[in-house]
Image (cartoon, rainbow, N blue to C red):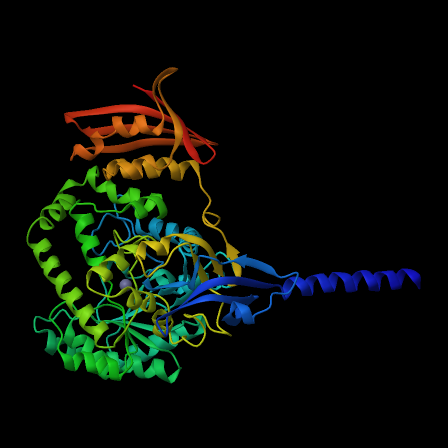
Length: 580
Ligand SMILES: [Zn+2]
């Protein structure tokens, strides 16, 4: 009798403990709340989070903090909703081998290897997104296999919320993607029956919405667009019947207009073939269509394929280093004919065309935004040269350069992202009852968009993450990062993975250099030698040691080869031994 009673007491204790942790409340006190809907800063506010929800928002003097609550002192800080990237693709890595329909390098890396890699690294991308404060990602074109993989991340505190379509329902399919079964990113529609069937086929996998690739190859765009319109209409009708929103890729004014007139909910790109008129702006506004301009993806293709790399410090230091490394493979692939053709094209007419489209796109973005159209920030990350995570900040800079105001950017990057997927009642602003996906910043994001990267904490699904806690540093990543920046001729990004008191030796023990400042002086040449390129021909990773066999070209005609032995300590490169 006694023992049973003891058990009951013990069990009750455990239950109470579980209950306490389940109902644990976090109070973010005395902070400035960024109200993205009213475009107002609310100083001296307290926000209460319970589990994954915001349970209260109000002036600090009106919200009493219970004694055993978890408190985050938000004094001097800014609390805003987590960012949304409204246009990404997880079936694409961002690397050079990811779009064989654009540049076919399958004989150097088979496409099934690339797909296998993107599946294996989806968690890495997700962790990077959350770490950067991007707490929601919208995949506007994936595969059946990725839809299934999406489900495994649903409850993970490290993963942003993922909204995802199935394969793109397309009016034209590039040859290279055919017959890939559940890895196929496209379903090509020939008839209206196809269109309806392909919507229905996705339903068991629960897509969050449906995507159309409205591609017109006809010389006469308007005539071609009209010919294909019945397919677009059939998809929209079938998707709406199943309460699914429809996103459309339509980059010409005419295709976008036809899609919107016929019920499209979300345009995933801006218009780049003509400067839009007021009636187009009014149409989108009247229909409450969300438009994602994707300003940087086009220029990133040109810069990468033309080998005019313009990667940023943020790209080098926060994106997946293996993906960035692949972009520089163009400099040493034996297949020079295809590579050189692109290099020439993007130095000439293709570059001029791309610059023209780019400037029209920017003018239209400003017109749409100022005309009251719902704009959402999105990158098209995963495309060649557009990195998952870091390209978001590049996109924001491009939007700012297009003349959008800081408040517009904040609204477009949060609540309008939620509107893109029809979930603005669920997340996207700091309101009671909404999801607790929050970003606590050390500085005012209205002063500079760079402050969006000055993160004190990311609260994702109610879980608090401090900077750097989500992506594990590895010796391989450190060494690859400095190699990438060396090849991109970016001195500060090159120095970033090194320890302040780094030592550089000539093997076995002759000290040649000590400290980052000495390195900074010695390695000035990487910014001054345009053809400089280092190819790693072999690599061994063992514990905290990475050994690279490096072949360096760009100093005259001669290639210099060496072995570099990198020793990693405390997540930095501490010693390097060169064997020459
Ligand atoms: Zn896309």
